[in-house]
Image 1 (cartoon, one colour):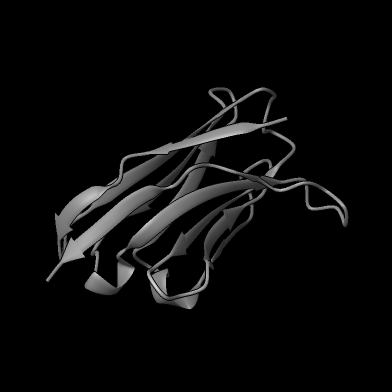
Image 2 (cartoon, rainbow, N blue to C red):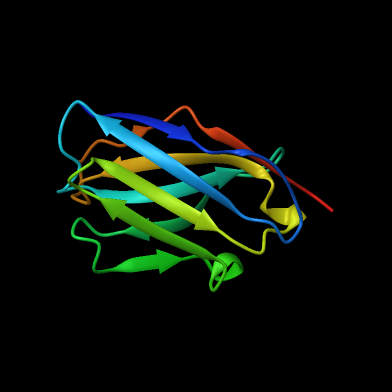
Length: 119
């Protein structure tokens, strides 16, 4: 079992920055593909960014490319999302997710952290 806990959300003006953290416990996340998802009211949960187990490979949804950076520190069992040049449309609850990437692997989710960007 992996327990995940997000932190770092808050209220920020457009153009500002926030850094989200995801703390993992229960077992090492070094073998897990880690993801950041977000969900705005009335919308489906959206994959924002992902990072491979060793951090060599990353993925970003087009809408955040060049503004967000995903990273991880396996020694600390942590994952991060640096969000710069924030826009009102980035407002959502942000969730971290861990998955081994195999067909029947279990998804682990945190409780989410609210990010609100004012215009």
